Image 1: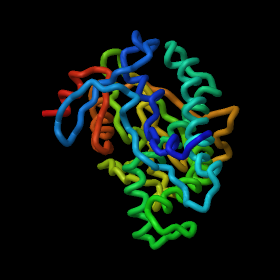
Image 2: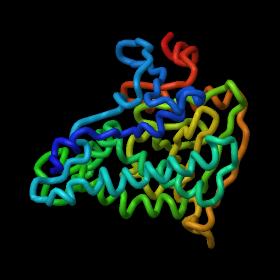
Image 3: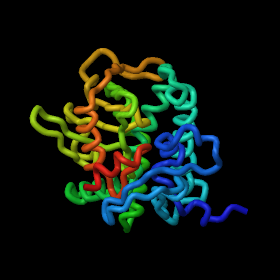
Image 4: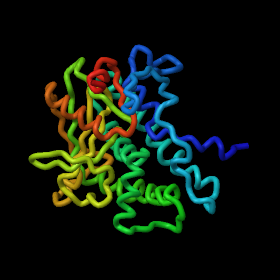
Amino acid sequence: MTTTSEYKKNHFVPKTYLKRFTDPLKWNDPVHYINSLNIRDKVIRINNTHTQCQKKNLYKLPDNFSMLEKKAIEKAFMGHIDETYSNAMANSYDRGFEPSNANLNSIMWFVIYQSFRTPKFKYHHLKKVKEQSLKMGRSDSDLEEYSYCLGYLLVKVALDVFKYSVLEILITHINNWFITSDNPASYWLRTWNSTEFVGTILGHHEKTNLKLLCPINPQVAFVLHLNYLKNSTVSNTSKEIQFFSRTIEKEELDYVNRLIFKSCDKQIFSIYRKLLEEFNK
């Protein structure tokens, strides 16, 4: 019989994502190990991806929900999107191929969902909820309030992000790698002079200078330019994604990596240990 304890620990950054930042020659091994830097104790470790980025009851729903509904966010939403993302990567970037439109669609949805599911997003989102005196559902705790918000984000907000964003794909040269973190998909406001981390989409969702950044593997990062298509005659669909790709040089790569570092919660990860050492000075 299924017990509730099976659903208490949630991988808010999935193992299948972290695997892409490990040695590809060892992907068929039963256990994958990743280089990580804890920004608090400043120690670089080699960790099993299975033990990383977990938190108990992150997607807990109120007690008056049935057990089936309690599992919906973790299993039906996150589990499904993680699986389609993994399949899309296996059919494209993992093999050195350009992604098809269907693969881009799956990876883009993964980035959007990933942006809502980390403890750091939860902290910033609930802080904004309180600042704006918002209330969703009949919840009495931050845990339950976040669960109600998360359901709304996954069903309603995610669709608008998907439909109206232009996707920019950044590709870096071999051996110049992107890092990633325990908060890999992050929101930024970009102006001519600065890039500001905003933590949550709430309160910024209509802005045309809002960006969603997420490294996909050590050589590819996605940048979603939100709301860019809202006043145009086209939008993204399951059959067609509005996107463009460009190769970036070391200077821009370093800039993007600094953003990824700035938006992390407790850890950053890299396929290359020496890159972590650069952030540990």
